[in-house]
Image 1 (cartoon, rainbow, N blue to C red):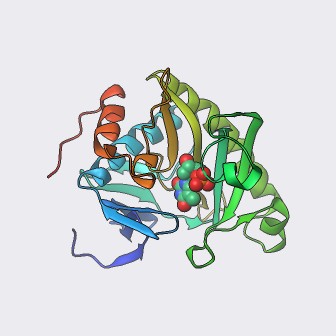
Image 2: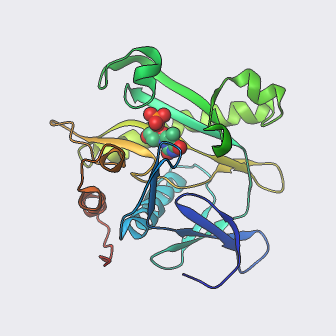
Length: 241
Ligand code: TMP
């Protein structure tokens, strides 16, 4: 890893100062966590795969008119990104019932939802990222009403684009999580990463899990699933370890 001083270390990534003002470096670790880091492991090569997959997805979104923080991939572990003030809200989009919504609302995994759901969680590990409503976001000033509208509008567009990108490689986009941040001029843009760590992706036809649920649920074969996604996207990702 680089000897630079980290500005922020999260569960799967580290943020370093960038080479120029207004830039940062996003470093992808091999650490895997689940259930708010109660479950932890190191999965060799996961960070490299997520770096390459997220680069590809962010570029496809940018081509479709979504502004993102991604500037360029620097190497197998690092991306140059635009510095943002992160909005402390995790935006979860659900097209099909899976994961935490099932016990919460008494749904069966794989059940179609009446319509796509957008849920919001406060980005606060100490509190276990509690689910929150628009009212909390506005009342506590985590985002303004205008910013909230931009987030929802961008999120719906991103959902449609991602569903198409993954359908083209025989994967069903079940759900995913996004984060947004503000540029110094106040523009709200997409941040973080888009990878099988923060999307649920099921193989068309078999519903085999091709995402981080392989780790969360001890199914094994996480690296193989991520490599298969990279291969289907046409990416050449060096194998680690
Ligand atoms: P959940 O079913 O556990 O709430 O997760 C919904 C989606 O959000 C799933 O694709 C995984 C993703 N996610 C994250 O990326 N980070 C998180 O901290 C959590 C809880 C979920």
